[in-house]
Image 1 (spheres, helix red, strand yellow):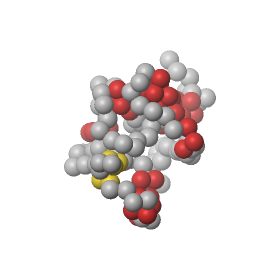
Image 2: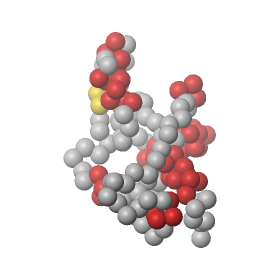
Image 3: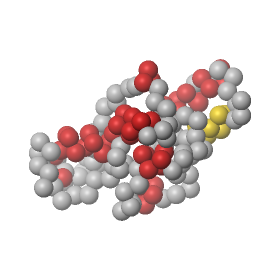
Length: 138
């Protein structure tokens, strides 16, 4: 088998597995390719072009293992762009974080404030769902 490519982006599980030696313990010849290495993350993430995980997978993601939200992987797999391994499904808590000195104290305080989330990602959908009870979509 050729070198196993792992492309982490904004997630910890690949780094934890690396730190704990899980990939080496399985005898994998692997390489980490950081998707945003050397980029200004605020600029790399805040784009107006609406390119997210699905578009990246559709274009041919150069990785042997990757993850995105269930919707994205399911749609990509149904169109032949990827394979979905459903037994690795997980649910992660999420939150909107602000510094303690921030004037934002309630979800309503976010009205009109830009929030950066990955396009067509789990954080995209869960942020909309969580905030629409405070701020209906217009």
